[in-house]
Structure formats: structure tokens, C-alpha cells
Image (cartoon, rainbow, N blue to C red; front, side, top):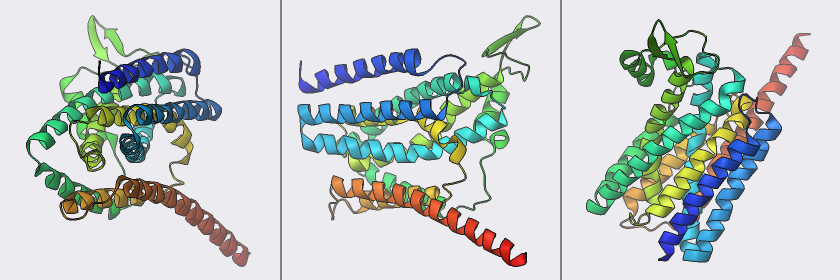
Length: 320
């Protein structure tokens, strides 16, 4: 058994045990997740991801560990954008807080399946056609520019979204009270409840995010044969989404510049892919750009909100 097979087995075992631990100890059915529980779960998943990074370093060396860490942070930062869309979907469907954890888990597991398919397809394309990296680069630059210049008033609308329309068209659905059930039997016919619709929407909408994030990760891990690093960094980042959702749920309006930070990351990653033939940008530099962009965007968002609040207080005081 070679090193990669050992790491694959350890990765699979860790994910399975972690999910059992998360479901059995950290999450209880129909229980509302408190901020304290969300912090514990976030520390749990981030700690597990870092422990796996240390294991890769031990087994495969520093270079693979740095690539894994950079890819993980890249996927994690891009996944933050998912959170705010998820929040809008939950509000739109009026999902009770006690169902949040279970619905999120099922939606995320569905998203992982789609990610595995996308990674396998992307790896095959990169291995067969090296010029595909330029297509990925152009696409990411375009996406980053579009995201950076997006109108702040343009908000995600679940009712007009393609995933919602697809579900309503092809599946029998009902808005009847579900009592936590995913399928209801009405007059002898089975219908998908709003909880089912939310799960399916979470999985389908992640496809859109995967279209951005999967090409981006190939700029960090350029060798398509290193599927293990790509899979593990992606899956650990996506599994951490659930706890991150509960942490950011009340802070959606506080990080108004986070979108700009993510846009700059996409622009950088896209540009890196386009110039890779002539200029080599080391993995640690990509790691620094990701960290600086996300933390900088969050800090500036908090600073700007505080400044606006002080200005508002000042103008109110002057009026008085």
C-alpha cells in the first residue's frame, strides 16, 4: 500500500468518524444551534482540517501540505459567499431554526457529491488539455471583475432562481405544514415539502459556486494527479460550512466588503493562471493574498460600519 492510498484511507476514516461525532455529540436533532455550539463546531472542523494538513506534511512533505492549506483556505473563503445565499433561502422558505442543522447537513452532503463529480471532470480535462487552464483563468478574471462591480442592490431572489424553477417544474411540491418531514402523502400522492426544496436548492446552487471554486483550486494544485489534495481541501471546506452558517447568520450585513475581497482573490487566481507559463507565483504568495484579502475585507467592513454609525450619531446630535 503506497502513501497516497494510506492518506486516502485516513481521510475517509476521519470524515466518517467526524460526521458521526458531529451528529452524535455536537448536533442534536431538532435542537437550535446556539452561538457557543457554532463556535465549538467551527473549532472542531477547522482543527480537524489543520490536523489533516499536519498528517499530509508528515506523509508527503511540506510542499503538499502548503498546497493543501492554500487550497483549503481558498475554498473556505469562496464558500463564505455561499453562506449569505443560504441565509436568504432559509428566510424565504421560513425554515424553523430547529430544522436548520439537519437541512444544512443534507444539502452540504448533496453538494459534496456534485463537487466530487466536478473535481473528477476538471482533473481529466486538465490532464488531457493543458490549454484548459487559460480558459479557467479567463473565466475567473471575468467572474472576479463581475463580482467586484456588482450592484449592491442586486440581491439573490430564490423565487426567480433557476434551481427553484427547476424544482417546481419537475417535482410535485407542497407548502403544507411538514412537521419536520421531507415528504408528505396527500390524497394518496407523495409531495416534496419546503424542507426538501431547501435541501435540493442548497445542493444545486452549490454547482454555481463549484464552477468558480474548482477551476480556482487548480491554480494552487496544478498537478491533476494530486486529486487527494483537491478532494480533501474541498470536502473539509464544504463540511465546515454548516458551523460557519450559524456563526455568520447574524452578521450578514456587517461584512459588506467581503464580496470585494472574494472578487480580488478570483482576479488574482485568474491572472496567476494566465501568466503561469512566464511567471511562477509560489504557493505561499497565493496563501498570503487569500488571507490578506479576506481579513482585510472583513476588517474594513467593520471599520466602515462603525464610521457610518458614528457619523449618523454626529448628524443626529447636530440636529438636536
